[in-house]
Length: 249
Ligand SMILES: [Zn+2]
Image (cartoon, rainbow, N blue to C red; front, side, top):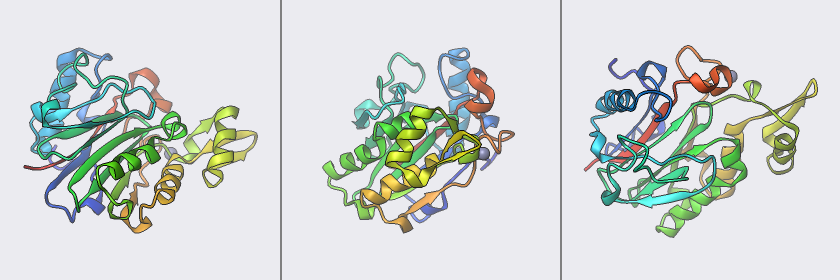
């Protein structure tokens, strides 16, 4: 399995950056759904493709919220080989340090990879509908600003993740998106649909990120379920993917 994973072309200009998103062929990247050593082995096999050592990885325990942690080289290894050391109840990580690789797991929710090539700051978000409602994207851009970043300098990759035609939502979720992201929600045959990628794009635009610096993957995890894990299609047995970003030493 060489070079058989997703990469954003928008990051190819930055040779100091490592990033990638796995797919179902690399197996489930979460803890708690299979033997711990299988998760570790899956992670190691994927990280090997990126030339990353698992001991340099930092992984949060996701909560579908908007908590974002700024981590540094002292956090390396947290959550990498077990769940107990993971950064708790956190859905976003940011680092200014090189050789610190940030990872979230996803299965329909969107991975959002953010890079400031001017200040060399990297971040990753796990953004599903709950996280988007909780404003994880604007909160992440605020965190970058607090570290000195200018939003117009940020380069962002969004997805792969579920497309709008596969994302039917309940009435209360629909009404939130109709109110706050009208361009990302619609009703058809009494069912409400939400376009999470569009909602993230709206957040990024509103916080000052240049649209020319945003790459939205058109890959849908449900449409391309043969390659990607989809929670909506597979429920608890879904093999969650890993989204990784970091700055090489
Ligand atoms: Zn789809």
